[in-house]
Amino acid sequence: MKKIFIAVTLCAGLLLLAGCGSKHHTITMTDGSTSVSIGAPKYDKDSNTYTYENVDGQATTIKREDVEKIEENIK
Image 1 (cartoon, helix red, strand yellow):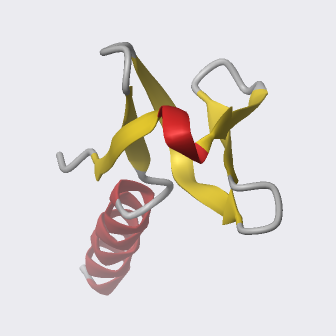
Image 2: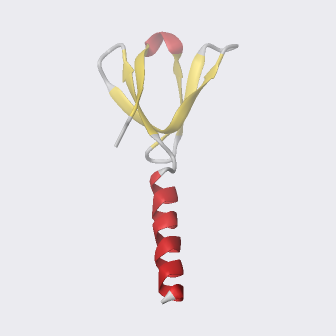
């Protein structure tokens, strides 16, 4: 009985950690188009750009002036 309890507790903990993994963000551009990033976009002050990984795994860089808003997707 003790082994079953430990196994159930371990599985529940793993599921909880998987749910708290990488967060997605929706980036809305000034032209109305949207893009989804895996994790939060990184802002570079020197070049005034955001860099992020899109859902296809490609690194993408966009100018700050082209971004209207960035919202975290809450599940």
